[in-house]
Image (cartoon, rainbow, N blue to C red; front, side, top):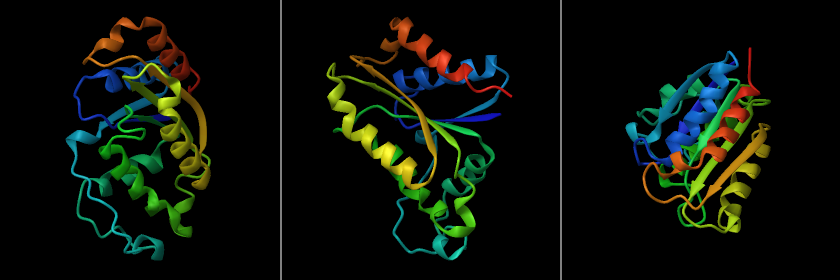
Length: 183
């Protein structure tokens, strides 16, 4: 079992990365192979709708996303981690998701169909409704790609960098989610 964690926060070692790591740690403890990718460390350009990938050709963008496609294809589970920015994901995560259009063509669809996905969302507001548009966007995106969004972990009320470390119960929930994915 391979679990790929995608951190969409620009903040290194922040709440999102800590939360995604708790899920990955649970998966490691259960025997899964894990890897974390920080989108802030990469150069990912916007999709411009050229549809080259829809024709079965590689993406024409010469950036780091081309190296991530293979990691996505090789994984069994993808953990998407993003804080809420203006009722949606960060710009980093949105650019990443936009490039999933690559998996739209018949030649590439099988690379993601049936994969499990987890959404991990720490955010400042204490109202869970604040995260609803983000969660809905992920649900619709995963449904469209025929991926299975198996869990959503919302952690409201975290603002300062690393503050989530004080939320032991939420980190334990993440760990338990991760333990569901073993070899």
